[in-house]
Length: 88
Image (cartoon, rainbow, N blue to C red):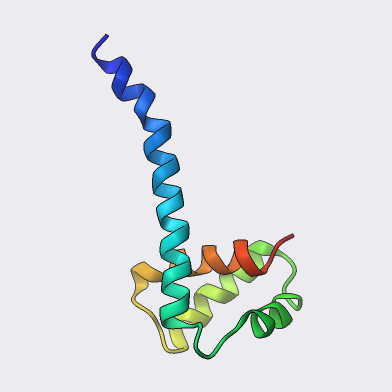
């Protein structure tokens, strides 16, 4: 019985974590990329890579070489770009 409250709280913690990651991605994008790369520029090259998986791989390579943010910031930035600017 003592495990039940813990098990019930797991979905809430995961949802909060995903929301935080999304907000972190938005904040990190604004700090690391937003001054030079606005929505129009990102959407333009994103249309050239319509497959989300291919686009994610390209973004990972791009972020590793172009004014690279710390490695632990790349995934939230990519998630933000994919969800905000590259809607399917």
